[in-house]
Image (cartoon, rainbow over all chains, first blue to last red; front, side, top):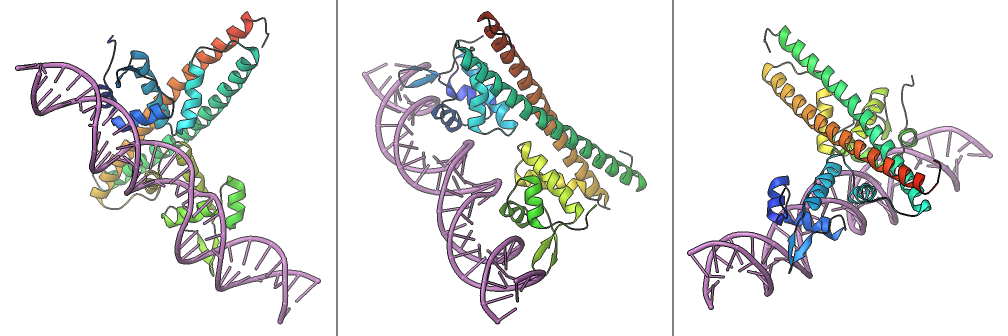
Length: 128
Length: 128
DNA sequence: CACGGGATTTACGTAAAAGTCAATTTTGGG
DNA sequence: CCCAAAATTGACTTTTACGTAAATCCCGTG
């Protein structure tokens, strides 16, 4: 496990631009270390980037991703805060479960469309 | 099953604006009938709107949604077209399966975070 | 027929999420 | 130490997905 990654290493690994990483930093999603002005990304930062991109692929906005990231951090000490966090976690879970339903439905419809294509090809005497 | 729905009926049902429906029409996603200038949405249009919103929730762009919708239509007659469509369907399936992995991973992490909160609350003597 | 309530069209506006460009600064290798 | 490559900052631009506003039109009702 490497100690630090440079910004371009991460851009190559994840297929994103430096602008994107700096944008996420401006938005407060990541906080890489600095040596002088140069950013040094720790493994934990790298992990965070991975989580951010996962959220992005799932169609979450930056502020939604921010909320998700918040709950990955160490749980707060105060009871009220803890309960609030539990509520937020459950909201996100609801959201994700809806997405999962949407996803399964779409996959089913795609499978049906696929089958229709294959059948049509068979009718035309094409072996898939 | 109703014959037609007005634009406002659909906005209420789906919680979207008329602007949004007209936008999807401009983008070629839906093609409601007209009586004069007034739009009349058939059940099939309504179903299409449902599919569009599902795609939207999954974070697909309008053009990606358009591609998905394309494959729901009757399969084309020509062999080349059919094969192309099969390729596209499989691409979408790949995409959705990636999303599903992202989703499951995120759900797991949220569950872990949830448990951490509950434990912390227990330590503080709070019964959830 | 006047009117009030929807619906439509056209046009401009905007927020989010980067992309692009230009002008420095920094840095690591020879 | 020096210089090309890499990194940084800041400003401006672009794309997407609608929002908003103004002007017009259509239609049933009193």
